Length: 314
Image 1 (cartoon, rainbow, N blue to C red):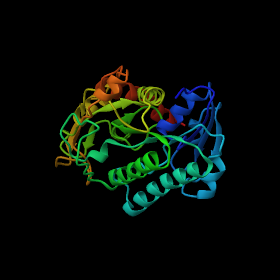
Image 2 (cartoon, rainbow, N blue to C red):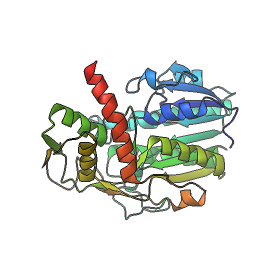
Image 3 (cartoon, one colour):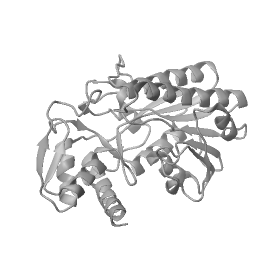
Image 4 (cartoon, rainbow, N blue to C red):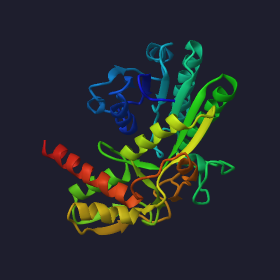
């Protein structure tokens, strides 16, 4: 599918990935950026996009933004915290949002949808993990909700005539991000430059992809993958440990703190301690990550240090 001169709807468009995708697409397309601003920021949405504050758990709000002239929906709206404090709400509302979007698309004849899933659907799987790995055994409610969403999407692709692209993300990092290990470490060191508390034993090791590279990969998949139901891992070929992230953050801030570990092999219940996705399928489609996992973390750190210092100065 060519992403030019299209009517594009992006749900969750004020979040990290959604806002960057809106910025990427709005020059050549009519982009409707949808977000309830419960977590995202209105300031992130580019001026070239048409912003509408709507709640995707409300079918009437979904009907307002998904109309018969829409060419493609990028459905990113979701609770994204793997350790969110209300498991039932996370699961029910994530799947409700996806079902609302799919029902409305079917009602008005919109046939193309791209969806942000997660590496968490695999659970604790052998690495590198390919898209056809089975059985899928998520260990967090967040991962369970994404797997449930994928089931709905598969049904609509195979039985309702839709074309769907599913992205299973590595950890995405970049500017304006909050609630991730990189901004968390920065904020802790702004509070106390001498000591940094690290959840777990610091040996947790995952693949990190910069949001700019993520958006480039997402567009490439939509433009080049042409099956009815397309699942692609998005990530890098390398990983970064939590202790290495701490080292990078400390280095970029010019600090040398002592590390204190809370212990255990993971940061919280449902945390997958080691993750690296196979990206051979993505590579065969013609896309390669331009940066290593460490380089992605360092670039995001540089961007976030400046942001967070400015916030505290205001």
